[in-house]
Image (cartoon, rainbow, N blue to C red):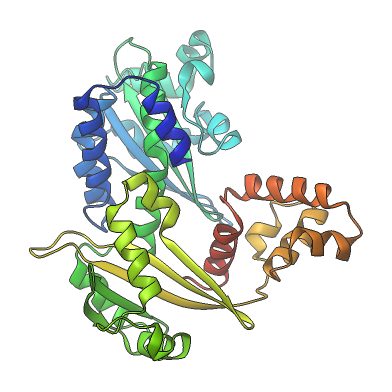
Length: 371
């Protein structure tokens, strides 16, 4: 999590240059809604911060046929062009799948002798790549979409604990960048994003230049906001005060803190009112934000991709959470001890790679109908 990563970094006595490089990587990841361009922009500061020779992101679509798409900024890696032939020999795959969001170095995945005997390593030697060391992390973008982010060294210099700590601190930002780019259909500029959103009948968004200048509002957003808020809830600009305050707070936060506060959820009647705050790529003027609005029914179906990852008892508890029941209510309904429910809830979050109930609700809604 970002706060844990921050504490880890603080304990490492980093130089001002290292902090600057990390900030540059984060800024680059947020500089565009085109994932290839974001990776290309982040490549140079990332490889200076965590020295490596190659970097790649493999997008893994889980369906009847598993599909792999490699995005490799900078130098082309011939080995990854033919990855589908060697995927079953990839010694990185099983360890990172077993520990999503955990950065692993090759020494934590496989012995040196086993690495050198692997078909993937032998093929890299044939291609004059000699991939000697690997560091990787699995990004659970959505239950049906994963990202494997990997750094490679073609020399015998192992990745250090400090290298792993840097990548760990960047992992939530990488995940956020992939989600934003995929959700916005890899629109490369703010204007294209608005064109795409505006063409969708279910789209609801407001574009704001902080602190209170409204740039654009979609027709459906106007309808939602009129239903959600009374005139007394609005700022003189017409923006709801509670959303304007959240946006102002976000602009003052560090990138790590923004990740934990970019979702506003309010329970009202039989539905949740959800606003997601997305910082748009830089333009010639002030940095703008898109406020994506959605109404989610109080009780939504548990997506099949989530259900398949849970036990029968956990499915019952997950459905209770989607009804907005408290742990006490779930325990009473299912005849369980409240502590048992709490334990199941923690395990559900771990299995589904969500942070809390709000994140669980948001991901479930996204799978039922893209949010």
